[in-house]
Image (cartoon, rainbow, N blue to C red; front, side):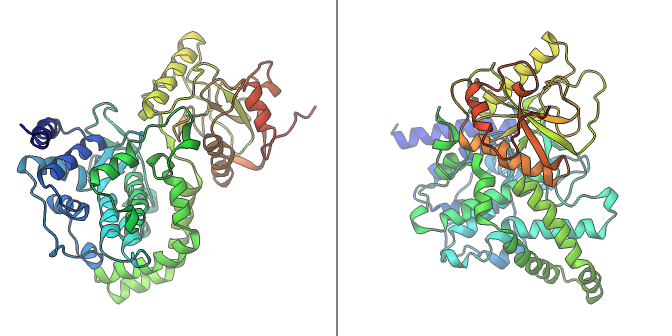
Length: 474
């Protein structure tokens, strides 16, 4: 058996097992892509992307408006036993029970809808100049945003959502069912995240020198990059952990304000809105789009991505939580000391979160993990007690401030700059703009108000140069 044939047989065995078990993980989807590539040697990535979309029966007049019919490319041969799995992870819908289908869990702990990702890649891989990627943003994001804002406008606001929500998997190690955490909009977190990735990667592959030889290689480079001990600061730019950073470089508020009204007009034409319907919307269009844009920019561009409790498999809160009275005047900076090493993967950071919660609940007798939020070195913040529950992080000051801890011992060194920026810039802006911190809030190190060496000599020295840092007033 030659090497190529052996690889095909191995991948077929792996994928058959994956398809039978319906595990909704990006790694499994990539293995399916590898199998299709192995069975169709020499097939261009554009044909593979288009073949996946067609296998999942994702075809609408709106898509045909921007993408060619593929008549000049060869469709890949896809074995029938794979089409069920392909459809389940690509074809997007939300059931009446709030289960979101057409989404996968990625290695970094985020959940991605594959349809907007693939549409972005297809738009970018089409033979056109980078300046004429006319379908990139409508296909990946703008159409979903417009549909969702319209749906919210046309329905009772108390029973609908503009954007979001996120959700939880039934199992992080064997994900099969993703259940939303609230009322579903037509632009869930997964659709927006997949849209961001589709826009980022679509723009990237549109440049001739960035064209991938294989689709699977591109997906592995983006979703499966493993950080080394140098952390995020030494990482390549095109990885999923830097999704929001890259998206902010790609999309500006002026661009959104210019393009969303155009997408609204296109959508109304495609859906054959009557003159009466258009007039009703026109009267409220500016307010509808401005409110929607404000929420989108705040939630998905200004705020950092925060891994929710269910994703790091937190234990329930013990007792009755005390609710904070917002906005708060203080932000207290900590280091965990133990765990002493920075966590570089979703799996490692999740283990550290569970270990700290066990220590705080079982050894110290607290109701929950003490911190409001925790910063991993994997590019994400982790939800502790969150925005609304009083923490147990800074004795005597828990009711007036959030406690944010960096995983690691920062006595002699400091976290990666990108990790610190998650707290220093993004979390702080998210909190002030969202009415959770006062605009003139104060940053203190833990040691300034409690007898402790926390947050470590090196990190404490660093935060003294941060905006909003202040000495304690007597």
